[in-house]
Image: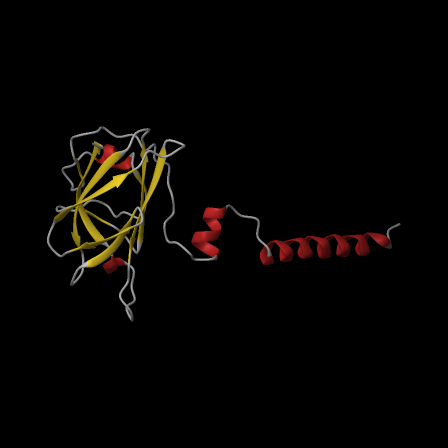
Length: 178
């Protein structure tokens, strides 16, 4: 019996090593973890956001604004507030809006870098200039009551770097559609 203990120990170690190797080759992880850290298809690490908002008054995104109101909408992709607004980090940022009727989203934003930036918001290509400008986006009522709104900044050919590509948002306003 004592002769088989070393063999049994080696077999146990080999099985454990094979399992660890299989897990490294084919990891079992959440879709978010896979997209951010393995496939690198996004840099947007989502965080809980209720999506609740007050219709009417704008949500100011500079340091003096109501941070809790913005955090309820902010899923990912936004920097800490600055004196003139909150910038998107990298090419993608997401907001969550919980609504059962059509709404209109007004974003007051400007390009962070030299020249205008093209931003895709709810399937619409919008040019954001270097000066603050208000952009209005109509949003239909979603079937499940939640709109996951992606702001994707297009990158000009031959450019690199994530931080400079975004836009700076001074305020958001959500109104009932008319």
